Image (cartoon, rainbow, N blue to C red; front, side):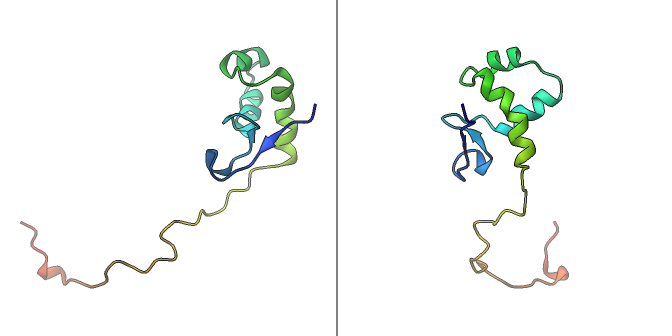
Amino acid sequence: MNLQVTIDPEIMGGDPVFRGTRVPVHMIADILAQGETIEVLLESYPSLTAEMIGQAPAYAAAHPLQRGPRKQPWHDRPPISTGRLKLSDINME
């Protein structure tokens, strides 16, 4: 069976997840790297199979996460207002 991975910006912010789940592949690979067993992961994530969990480290190694600056939704919008105040005009009481 081929590892089925979905990458969708609307699901988990675009992180690769196992198809039909919201379980990130890289997270499972990291948990395995920390020494957790496949049996414990199967109990914690019943939607995964042992084969899926076993293939996660290979996928993560072949497809490292590429984090870059995320474009903020307000990036292309003009400021709501602009102006300056003198520090002496601000009432601090």
